[in-house]
Length: 493
Image 1 (tube, rainbow, N blue to C red):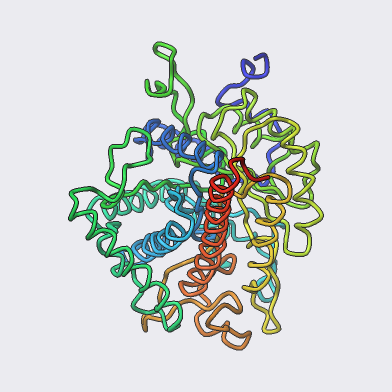
Image 2 (spheres, rainbow, N blue to C red):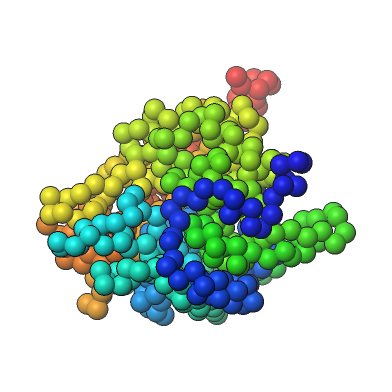
């Protein structure tokens, strides 16, 4: 408890801060932060606690987490078409997972705030010039002549986040997410016949199930969300997230709020909630035990993520969990592993073992993207679908072998289309067999390469098939056990 009592909203400023942004105009920064402190919260404590509850279900293998979206958002991409495409892809992916796994899906988008990115170097070479690295739209501009960090961009990030979140909420409460119309989720441009046929099979089965439910006067099932206020057919819960990189910004949007009565037994209890997003994560470059980011994160009540890579030692991971989740609160911490297909076997088993021994409750999520980045022969940063799947399937297998379970996936994907209605071409392979020569056709990311719509559905069907086979295997074992008991009068071994 002594550790907790020493925390304050600004205590992180006494620690070294990795990836800090150096603003030339500190006075202007101070004015911007003061303005942010007075602006309305983007999310509420009730929504945040609802997510934490649902993540506790993921931890117990009663739900599955889909964390997905852009590597980095841009202000220019804040349009009706782009936002609708992202949500449509997340809903399509979710539907495929639900159909195979028969588990509720917790949806967290990398959206409405993912405007900043860490960089390995403060400067980069553009042509024959050395300029400050592009750090994302809420820091500086992509144009080499616009690289001076500008505090006003933090205000622009807030208002673009608010606009995005407002549109997302509008979509999800106006029938866009209804299971009665999944064909509206932008599948029209998918050119793979096999993907279209598989998705249509699911839609036809779903339509039959919903028709049957209506006939007998029932909804498609009771809501698993805390409170059960929403219809699982007409609406879904959707949460926002971003990397908690810009600590000045995060502090300005952190509020000391009453804890919802549904989760607190203490009268008039209050806590610090980051109201810029429901879920924030600590990156692999900012997880220093004595650093400012860990110091800030240990004091907020939001559920948080921690990126775990090959450089993370097992004892360091446990020490980190001891700091950010001292009371071992269920649903509080999600570990997002990102090793690379060739390294997952060397690190994941020991990390699982260490966390199990520590008795810390965590959600395990696989990020098969960040550890598998490469440069193509044409000089573009890319990822190969094959290695993404290799890391994902290895994670599933290793968790099973370690008597653990994979609770979800973290993916960088996009449903964006160009003016001609074509998907982006940033990652190699998949059912469309995208080649290196085709990368330059529609390479639109200004940060990391993303899976396009078709490749994303490829991943969804592979995961869905795994859990469907696993579910059917367990069902067959149960049937075998029942039959054995009936025939022999004793349970099978």
